[in-house]
Length: 271
Image 1 (cartoon, rainbow, N blue to C red):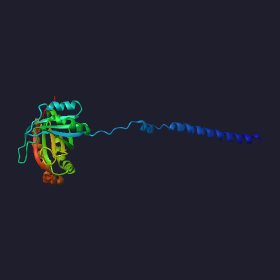
Image 2: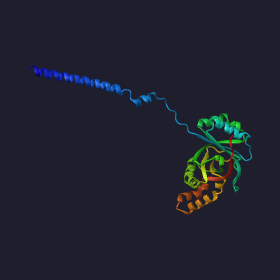
Image 3: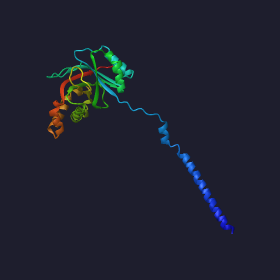
Image 4: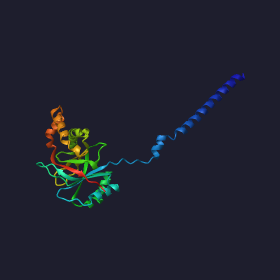
């Protein structure tokens, strides 16, 4: 008679112990799960600042003006103190003599700033030290390709200057569809180590509309001598082959830009 009672009691006790165990396990799991790594990290981690976008400007001195004697020293100083993240200074050698062309500049520098704020600070506090004859123009980079062999100190610089007749988006399309394939051949041949297209945000230097500057670097004087043959042969290929988009742009590019100058310049070492 006692066995059934003992069995019921054992069963009841077993169920109670099982429930207690389940509750205890549940509490243990809850305690373990409470400090979730992701949630804890997101709450305690400091807010990360967005990566700052570099800013770019071109510095140039018009042919009838004069750069300060210490221009190279000033640029070197601004690079040393972090105002500039990079700078390349060049000096006029010669320009293409052609109807409608001009010299464009006597001195020319590519200025890279670590951020837009850095450029604005430079513009407000330091640019005036360059004097009234130096123009610093904020630009957008529409295209930039550089090889590992690019060495500004050994390069021959050729800068094509054009007055843009269209808005930035249209000039970007022109750059992508026409300039990039054209320059890309010289680049892949090894004679050119860099080509960059800059577009001014505002008109400067007495020209009515913003100018586009196509800055190219040839690896050496010997490689520069190959420019005409490499460029000419490839252009014949594009004009004679099945490249309707490129051919159309080549025939209508005067609607997009006005040729202004082509200048050869040499690098100026910074102290």
